[in-house]
Image (cartoon, rainbow, N blue to C red):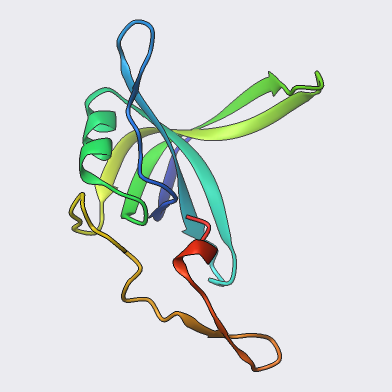
Length: 132
């Protein structure tokens, strides 16, 4: 059985593309928290056809979504000719877990932007510091 279920936030606003045959596709990345909530993973995903169109139409950077799909391994050669492997989730279902409007200015507005460092000093985090 090959089934992945993930919940995460879009790292950038999704963009719709079309293949040479006119089939719609959207590649996107979601940031998912690990169990300890101290680290996150960035998972590449692909969705096709009407779901790709809807994702691009209704979701923006920072939107919380859930995806269900199959994990696929892809191999390719990098610019130096070395063989590389990457993984992507081929999405069969996408759930929008947060109501959002396409023109939402800052989806992280309600987040606390003051964080204490390891030595107890406060540091400021801006939108530019976020990886997504």
